[in-house]
Length: 426
Image 1 (cartoon, rainbow, N blue to C red):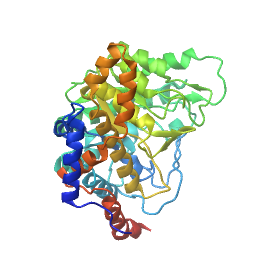
Image 2: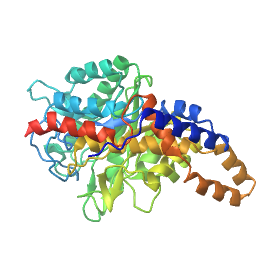
Image 3: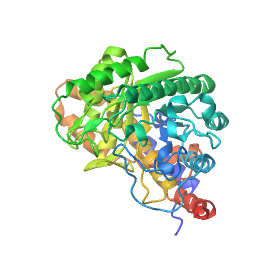
Image 4: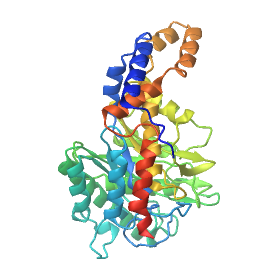
């Protein structure tokens, strides 16, 4: 492959020209880059091993989750997974977090039930995060388990099954708080369950009453918000729950507002015609903070690698335009086993960052003024002209400032790593 990446001088010259262009619109690109460097993404650990975890190697996925593809080199151990993540973080400008699932515990070969997990089972992750200045977010894993085979966990009619998952979620909250204390940054502990019916149910209310009761038990013990933030995540439907999902958007919206917990909006969990960007301004009128999982659903929640699509840009535009960057916790949630997994992480994360940059480069106040004055002509003209502005030159400068590869350079590093590490995994 020919190295078509620009030199440092070319990058700086292009940035100087772009800075002048944006200054004509009243946008300070230096300030924009400073703001962009403060946006931390929470990278999802499960992209690296197809949501397998380390609980039972080779176990089948459940809960309507499926990773498709068989590209060689997926991580088989925590050491390999952390090594893959290290490369991804080196290829991303800025400082970022990790989103960890409970099934990624390291138990030294011992069988530990999920409701008995302790902070000590994640000591390796904490040590790694401290060394690399990463915060950690957390998720109880309420799928791929014998007690989830019925399709119900926290909303199960079986009180024994419900209690097991309640205890697992309580243990997860405690682990999340431990991360927050150890790393000096709050852990967002997010609860998602697969509970639902494949066919149309007769009773839609009782499972939701049971879920509410379970959540009340989980959240009964107060946890200091400087260490742990609780979140609940809705879904429209999934494999095995096509006709009814207990934890619908409306259920969790009401629960989050009533109980002052974060609402997780996953961009792959709604109907394709629904805009998650449009939901943000509404829910933030009633909630102090939200969790946003950025994915790319195709037809259904298929969790494709995030691209620089209109939807991705709209979500970041909404966050920036409403000035709520400090109230939205941004995480990624996709897994593609058909391409190099390290590349999937990097491509998706960089696209979210680029969408954030494009949003930050808007003359927001000028657009607001035109809109409030009823001057929709100017609003439309500005929005369309912005699409042709040299934002990519500003992005290249951002990468240069943070000493990460510009342009196609990062593919070269990924290919080298694939040869040296991934190909050796068989």
